[in-house]
Image (cartoon, rainbow, N blue to C red; front, side, top):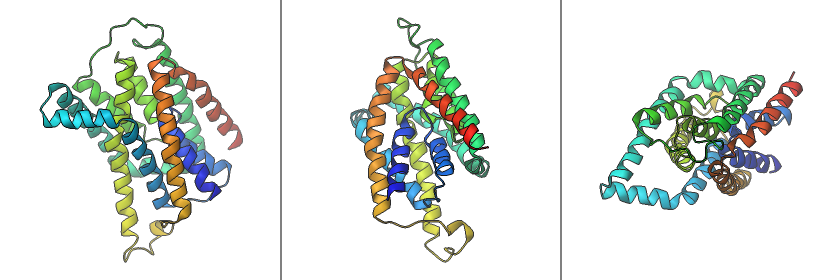
Length: 273
């Protein structure tokens, strides 16, 4: 039960804060000598954080869906940009699935990736719409900026590279407003996180049939109280993290997280020799 709470808290906070949830989960399991929680447990943790996105951005999501139905240009463009961004994410995530999953077994590589994330965050201080340029005129999102952002989101499948941190950083580098960058990075995560959870669920479902004795299914996991507690913790902490990060992004303070990420990466390299 304690491990479920710890992993749920790590997932909820680190999924949205620009510190890499996957990186923290890998290091948390390595340093604390935790056993693998199971495929189904990971799915439900992601479901908890995905639900928190719908709660925080419920008005924006409803406005976009109604706007699509009413054929409003602004909302149609917004939805189109999310679709464009999702394409390279899917290509990278599915095309390099095995290579990416192998990195989860390499905690030291995760530490190096965390150092990269810290550098991306720190450099937002100097972005065109960063804190040094409060009067800068923001550039609009367009198809090629959405494509770049989606590609970065795909690369962020590497554990230790923060999805929210890297995508938000690159949007700021491209001159997109802080408010838009903060919202877009989480709304475009819905198909990415939801799609990944769906693929994992299909793998788990296969393990409930004749193939359940295969090596891949040995740690599939089952629905129990510990799993539900972990999901609840990830949901509640995810809401907290989302509100906190949106405030940091809009105030131009995203670079503050770089010091924490650097510290975790360096400490991990020291402890995991």
